Image (cartoon, rainbow, N blue to C red; front, side, top):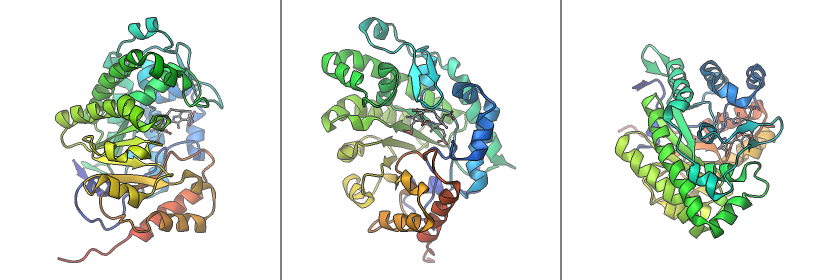
Length: 357
Ligand code: CP3
């Protein structure tokens, strides 16, 4: 595949880049008035996700506003548990809710990986997004496909609703019935592998795993209940798709960066609480780091945004094996103008004239 702009892919090589590539987690979303407008035509969020036209339209919205270096599929991590028939709904003003959470042995023993064909709407959306990015056989920017981590999916599947308890039901199960939790993780792992593979075969150039809740675990619990699945996914995908970079983002699991670096991932997401140069020391030079501006910066002012970029990159090289991003998703209260200021600051500050050979 040829790209008009392949800076993001080159961040997974040893090259020193002319500037830091940039995209933003949740770049398509409610902070954009055009997203809210498009979204208002659908009664439910999952209905919107099932429409390839909607997915393409909103995937393109941030690219129309800002010179970003990657596009991300518009979908959600909860498509997999939805396909397992756990009764997923998104209430207005509240998070996801499952009508039939996995609370006992009987429901967990009955759980099966869904047939991938029930997720064909996601693969259709990937192909449609890819087609929309291609002009005359050349893609504007690479397309990112994604999935939730087996542990993070299990958090929602077992808890049923909300994250305010920091997933106490999952943590209780981890102590009392680790065998049941492991079973859920095994099913999720097998499904995530096939799901990500199919997204890549449908046109995704880079794959990302969101382990948004890995941070509710202690380092040893994290290794057992989240990292093991991530390693299994990474090694399976390395065999099936050796040329597709894989990024893993375990939010709040900074104590475990050195063990994360042992998995066969190409990139690691860094949350906003961490220090990029310290993480670089922990993981070594081979892994691409992605992050870690504080999402709250997008609701401040242009000078604070600029200072924040300078502060994050102090003692850190943003032009090699690095992708600029937030340290978690953009929040709905972000100002589109300040997101623009962030994009500009990242470009200006990282721009370098490469030494001529
Ligand atoms: O540009 C993009 O990145 C958009 C694609 C995207 C969405 N969700 C769209 C979405 C991606 C990559 C996600 C990932 C996702 N979904 C994560 C991991 C990232 C993270 O933030 O930690 C998680 C934990 C979810 C689960 C989820 N989906 C929740 C908890 C919610 C409700 C709360 C919230 O943040 O809105 C969603 C709904 C959702 N997914 C929305 C969007 C734009 C908002 C719903 C709407 O528009 O009605």
